Length: 272
Image (cartoon, rainbow, N blue to C red; front, side):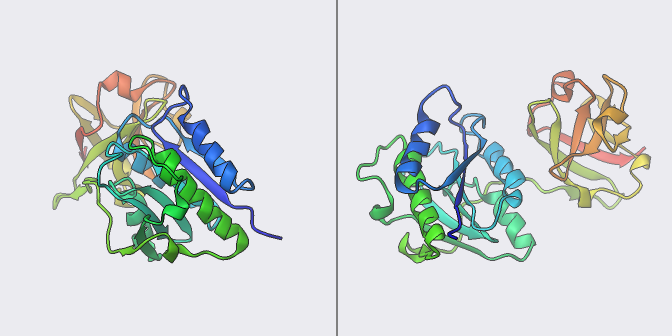
C-alpha cells in the first residue's frame, strides 16, 4: 500500500487571511492524498527565531519522510534562495534565511544526514510566481511534488535544484558556562501561557539544582519544579519544559507579564 505523505505547515500568516487555505489548495491540486498538518500559523510576523524554535520543537515527533514547510519570509521576492533540505529522515522546504538553524544544529548533533538544495526547477512551481507570495507559488507546490514522489516511492531530490554547501544561520546564543559554575543564558521567547523559554537545555543544567538560583533583572528565582502545579499560584519558578529547555514560569499566571521580560533578556544561574 502506498505511503500517505505528510506535509506540515509553519507560518507567520495567521488565519484571518486566505493565505494558509490557498497553500493547502495548491497542495491538494498536486498531491490530493497528502495529509496536511498545521504546526502553527501564529509566529510573530517576520520573527525568524520564533519560527526556528517552533519547527525545532515539533519536527522530531512526525513520521519519517514528513515534508515540513516553513514560511517565515521577510525577504520574499528578493534574491534569498528557496531551499529543500534533507535532515535526518525528514524533509524541509523553506526560505534560506536562518529559519532552519535549530533543526540543522539538532540533526548534526545527532549525527544525522544533512544536505541542502536550492529549489530552481520551474516544474515544481506554479506557472506564474508573485513576488509577495512564495508560500503559494513555490513552497507549497514544491512540497506537494515531493510528497507525490514519496507516495510513489520515487524520490528525486536532485531534480529540484543544485546542491548547496550551507544555509544561512541565525545568531542563536549558546549558554556560557563560567569557571565558578555559574551559567549565563538568554530568554528566547514567551509562549502562549507566558512561560519564558531559555536557551539552556536540560543537559546544560547542574545536577544540584536546589543549590542554584536564577537572577533575572531585579528578580531572583529560587524554586525549581518538576511540574507547573508543584509551585503555589503566583510564584515564579524554573522548570524544564516539554521541549527540553529551561523555562521560567508561574503556576496559573504569566511569568512574562509579571516580570516584563522580553526575548533577548539575559539571566544568570549561580549558587545561592
